[in-house]
Length: 459
Image (tube, rainbow, N blue to C red):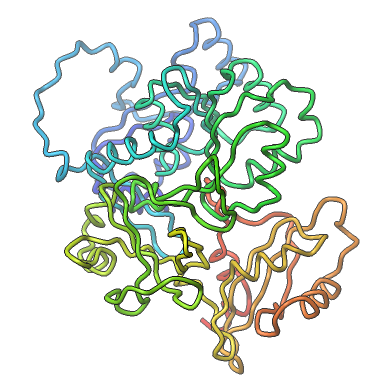
């Protein structure tokens, strides 16, 4: 249904699809869409003939049956070039529709112009100062996501570099072996979620591979970067890792921490060139707040990378793009405050704020505090309906491998009561083997919340 939602939202009339995915993912929904033209491809299309044939015979290359009138992508590439002259207005004409993540609601299509995307590449160039001709961008993230679209694909093209693409997040031995073999020394860029850097830093066989000095500039996004992960990754790889911040509606990069000099863990760094940000009141977005935690509000940004709007959703667009001091600012939906250096600390998503007995509790803060327990590897927090207190806090916990079967719910909750402010203490805890994540590694709190019996009972 997610694919159908995207096809109908964008009113797509043509679809390029892997033949292996067609029978299960496209055929059942095709009649409900406006798709008129199907272009089919296969992952073996560009392999040498013998390898392609053997791969399909031995079922090493997945295939699937497509309609007889589907066009072959490989054959279309043989069509003689006859490009029409197309005049565009870069600031007004749409380059792409990118679906928002949907972590706090139904995904919407952000309308990004050519000006938005090129601007964000130019801005990123200032940060990726070690990038350039021949630089390698490690591509583990899916390219249909805005983070990968800009920081990996578009940035590589703009910098004159190349992409090291993986069809899915690789095992640590695979990515290490590939980097050792083909990545250039000192000019390899790696952008991803914190979990990717954490896994690499904790990989026990890392020393078997000669990757020290390969990485130059690495950016962790889709969630906070914690100091232990940053320090461990930099120690074992020799690369520099910083935290970036962005959202689909901003093409997506808004800011990043510096790679050198004064680096402040816990902030989302400095705004990209040409980007302004402010902390505005969360209710109306009409009042600018001051400096420090006492002036917590909604993070709002303006710049050439900010979208034109949401496709066919004028009310949502008006709510999200506001006029302030003669400029268009994007209301990010993130809550935070600005420090004395002009850097911003994110506390959490506005829609995920937990209200417990009148207290405002940020899930991110609960997660960071519970994550301080020596047995905890990963944690997610969310509010669940409660008649007496409004909401109660529940945490879903993944234990470290060597603590599984040893730590108990009671012991961790007791530790929380002893180490956390009373209104931030979780009332419920559930152990999980893993936490649900988006394709870029962002924990899906909403999925955990809505699957809980207390949530279902209240709704």
